[in-house]
Image (cartoon, rainbow, N blue to C red; front, side, top):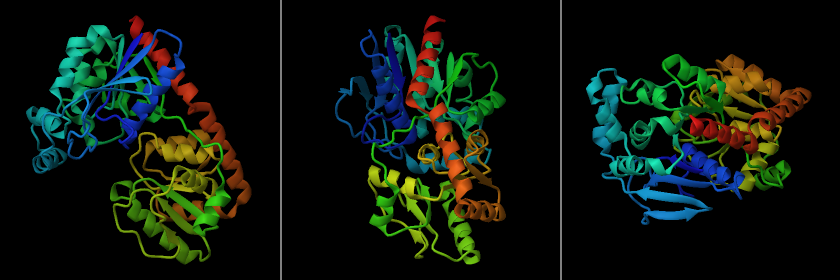
Length: 394
């Protein structure tokens, strides 16, 4: 069995969610079939930065933890000004459909050599696994190997699902590997002619062996806190989180703090009850989850949310934005937290989580059970292996 993953970036230096998911799936799939005649290749670019697509990796080929990685040079870096102009016209709804393919090339990474490799070598592989729907090598690559392709869309409700150049890949893929039931429902509502062969995956949670919430509290001088983890940015709705938390503290004075973990893109309010420790280690991150009253995630657009799963895996409940169907689905299935639509619900549900210790604890236990049932790596890799076998036999 010879499996080939296709992804826009790949490597330990790459920190994107889809790219890291590909790395984990490729390595764990190979590990699960150790001792069998089974190999895993990855086709990717030499880029690290998804904004510029600048070629930074030098070698065309390397082996990373047993996975054969083939790198192709991006033909040209992204022309940021032109792409932003074309993208703005598309989002305004006035970009003609015949220019959608130009949008795709400008979005990048533009690697026709990678697509040619797929065309020339397709008979050497049993199954191709493409991650995620939005990029040039995935869109053009699937068209070359429709009959032996699996697509991990990582889709959420956004305008780019309507691009005329992208729509065909959903029906071209022989198999679909969804992260959540909500993602499947979204894709099925938007596209016709979808394959009946699908499975559910996502990302498993890797917990360190020694997690200690008290250690984080002592190290950073906090005792009673909620936590936000992720990019601190407008796109993650963080300004609203700041506003809601400040309003909450005005109504409920006390020691409760908001601890922020992640890359800082926007200005953080200068307050003693909003704590930003900067970059922290993996140990500190998981310790921070474990010591928190709850994790809060204000984002309206998530395809899975590994930070929610990490928090739940440590028995910590979550408070999430009801506008995100995926997050709402996690809460519905796990019963491990609350959603909120506006400030009043945010205030009421946050106060319940931080003041009702028994409910907090019971929700945390349900969250751990939820992750253990659906989001262990054994379950995810088992589901992917099964779908690969179905597609291979078609």
